Image (cartoon, rainbow, N blue to C red; front, side):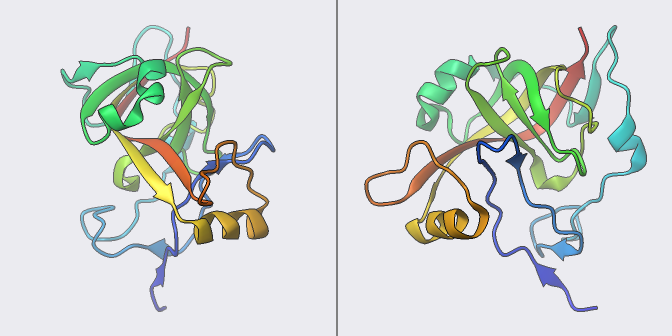
Length: 186
């Protein structure tokens, strides 16, 4: 079977209640280190159904280190200040991927502004029922400008909605690439 390539990796919240990536079942991105061999990892049933404990932390990815802890609200107010710097954020999982557990939306508190957290390299996963869990996440903020063509395509093809479209038609997307995440139920 010939390899298929992920044409774009744009994730968004479209006000329909859905947030996150499109999932492509047979896609690979050579050279991106998904499993160390260029192939994207697949979540196992154990990854998808793991129970998040109340008396400890469910840990995925790299162990949380001693990076600087930053307030999510402050970081979202000035994302360029934190872009590319390894930091720790804490909050609650607002929603998460329902296919593989490869992303989560995390806010400091329910109802507050949130950030999309993508598991680095698609190399680790969280349970599909992670919404409502407390989260500690280590990684880097990413600030990316989506081109006018990308934005137009997403609007025309997917019905995407953007709150803050720039005057030139582009959109600035802020996301968080996690190297490790810990989850706990209250």
